[in-house]
Length: 367
Image 1 (cartoon, rainbow, N blue to C red):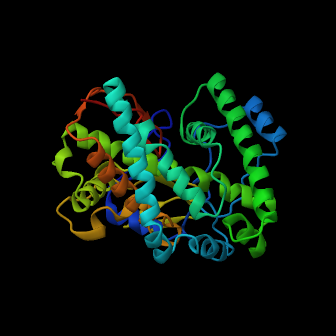
Image 2: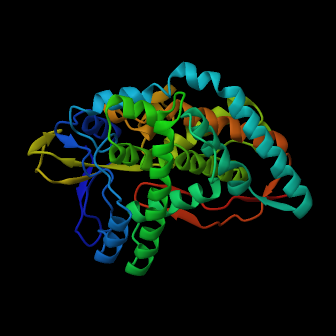
Image 3: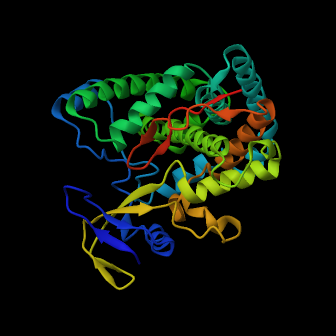
């Protein structure tokens, strides 16, 4: 086990980097609870809390942070929307959306000489796919993307008080929109995730809590994965050539390489539920643990073992893992096919760097 406890001024977490140790923690939820997974890294200030309270903002533990017996049943409901058969049947739709985005990106490139691939091909396809897959209406996509980034910064960033208050207002707006969507979906005929959760017995606040982070994680992390893959591909720094990426095999291998080396979710948190031992080292109750999910695997490993921790492991493993991998590979493949002979126009973009999320904010390519 490679673990280090840093001072509160630098890192308040015990950091685990070695993959076997990380997997060990994730497979012991009774000892290492997910209760802190969705707690704001920067404590919310009084003014920020009041903004959220006025919006009736509440995040009871339902899925990612749920360590109770109710988790398994709720997870089964959500998993029903991400079965291998469902994801496989959706591939033609994913490809059609990605191909349209690639065509639009090519038109922008021809018209302006440059195009930002984050906005042109990475941002919206995952959001469209997620909403359709969950049986929810596809609408307000620019707002959803902005709310998602703001919420990630609010919960996993280090905003100063003024910025935190701005982000709290954004989160409150998102939550109000989500609550209306939940009520509409529960009352709608036909199968959708929110009505299925209501039939399972979840209350409106519980459905909103699950939906809040699922509507973010279900699409923004895939956008970020695509963004990083396209940046590295255009940069030519990871052993994959742009001219080869229209091959489905090459696109898939590139995505798996990025998942293993710098996935969009590089870390995740756990907290020791009681005094326990990990690989012979005593872990006190209440210890905050930061698990490094990506970047520490041998790239000589074959198969899913080389990148499996990018989606977590155990009973809280990401339910959308196969969907995210498929979407990212298809978008990269279709983008490379539509934009041939491009070069990276901005080699040093600003990056999103949060505790548990990372990606280039722009990927600008030119002729």
